[in-house]
Amino acid sequence: MFDEFMGLPLHPLTVHAVVVFVPLLCLLSVVYALVPRVRGAIGWAAALLAVAAPLTAWVATRSGLALERKLIAQGFSGEILTKITEHSRLGDRTFYFSIPLGLVTLALVYLTGTSAARARRMPSWASVAFAVVVVVLAAITAYYVFKTGDSGARAVWETG
Figure 1 (cartoon, helix red, strand yellow):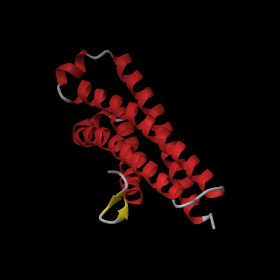
Figure 2: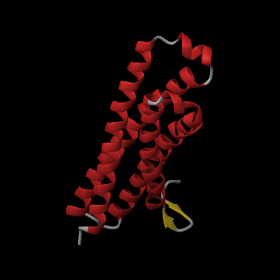
Figure 3: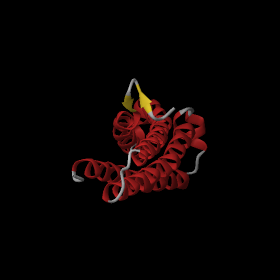
């Protein structure tokens, strides 16, 4: 299922969605958390990315695993397999950190954006706590999406 799409390996195709959606989730979640005046304008996009980014990261990890198995079956080993394993480990972390970032972003959008009355009932310390959690998770997730992409590119272009 996660091996090919129209005869092409699925992993390189799905990676493009991840490198767009995950950084956008990081950016919009931080802006949403720190700039209350723009929440009405970007809340829908933040909520959509909170679902789409982890989903695309999951598909990329599954398709990457299928590609790795295919390469092993074709006899790949040694340095390239070590690089692929490291890339896979980083990709898993990107996925694992995108989930809580997405969930916290959804919770924040729900608590602050769907009803002015609900937002007024939320204590001020809760808004600060959400902002801190979002910024930390976004920073970690952004780090891992960068490291994952970098390790994948190096595995492809630096292994001869």
